[in-house]
Amino acid sequence: MLRGRGALSVFLTVLFLLSSAPLIGAQDDDSSFVRAESLVVVVHDNVSHDSDAYTQGLEFYHGRLFESTGIRGNSTLREVNLSTGEVIRSIDLQASEFGEGLTFVDDEIIQLTWEEGVAYRYQMETFDLIANYTYEGEGWGLVYDGHQLIMSNRTDVLTIRNATTFEIEGTLNVTLNGLPLTHVNEMEMWEGILLANVYQTDDIVGIDPVSGVVILHIDASGLRPQGAGVLNGIAFDSTTQSLWITGKEWPMMYNLTFIEPSIPTQPEPEVESPETPPSSSVDSIYADALLAILLAAVVILLAMNLKDGGRNPPNEGASE
Image (cartoon, rainbow, N blue to C red; front, top):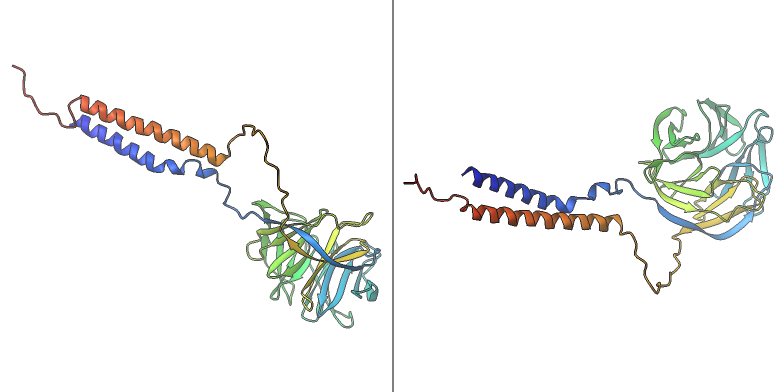
């Protein structure tokens, strides 16, 4: 009787392992994070831009273009003619200050400084100073999402601030394909996505403003003019539904959209060389092999059990 129960236990164990076999290899799946969609830019138009402007922030307001420029001694807040690139009006920051990102909250402008830890609030029509705020760390990019301010500071952590008081209300960790993404710089809201350029690269990323996950990874290479600085400046004109980018000391601004990259068709090789099977194929092979081994074990156990007289052989009594 004990022998029969032991065989039954082994049999049930084998059945459990068989039912679990399809799960083998699934633990290495990398689907625990959202992989960013890869896009490239398509240029539809270009206009002149001040090649002496060390662009740090770019923003449209009711079709009018505003810009923040950097470099100590040359930092400005300015309104720019989109068609010609000419400066319509401008004010200078203090010689010791390095201008950074800017954004609009209704008809007021907020402009950051880099290492000085001061943000300025201006009246849009006059550039009159309304208020200033202090903060710790570096100031890089700034955007208003309609409710709160979002500020970048070189790290992978964006700071959420009150649009009226500039007080910190939260943070947002930025990740690209599951890893922290640093050097998020100038930012812009576009179709509910937080667009940002990654400093010292030709990359633009689209960030989910709720989770901080990068869902778009955009290749903007090939636009930087020879001898110009890095990409820096993204602005969406809601009056024309057009998106514009430029960079530090670029002589041009570009109106663009994003598309999926085309993949060239590869000719079929005449002779296929053996390749290492993908991990999913390897997992399938291992699962099939384990299944075969376990089935063989079941057959052997059943055969041994039958050879010994079945699960409950009759009691033949004492030998005479």
